[in-house]
Image (cartoon, rainbow, N blue to C red; front, top):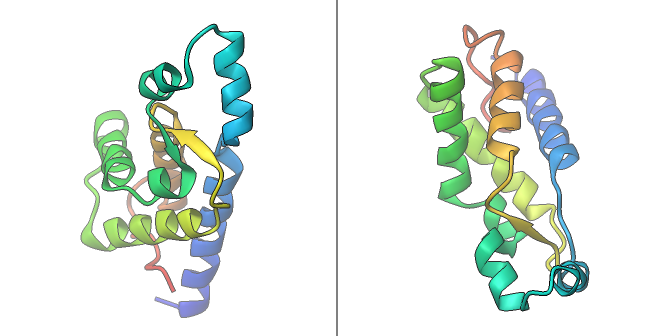
Length: 131
């Protein structure tokens, strides 16, 4: 596998993840909670809100993406693909500002699964290992 292609694939995947994220600051989220007439604690629990860097770097999001590939596309993820997915999510997590929040209850796993399968050529080609 060409290392330059690997770096390019990783960068493209990272850019895709970053473009699909819906993040908010605590201030913005608090305003939404106020408009909904709920406490911030209730809103955090209902939406399962955490720091964006934590959500993106979590085993939960990685496994939800793998599950989406299996459930929606009947694709069995190889170890190389799993490592690459973890690398992309780790890079996305590191790129997040410390104050940004996001919800575990989002469509990132399904969107990412769709993107990855397309970038893998419908599942036939292995996804590039992160640089």
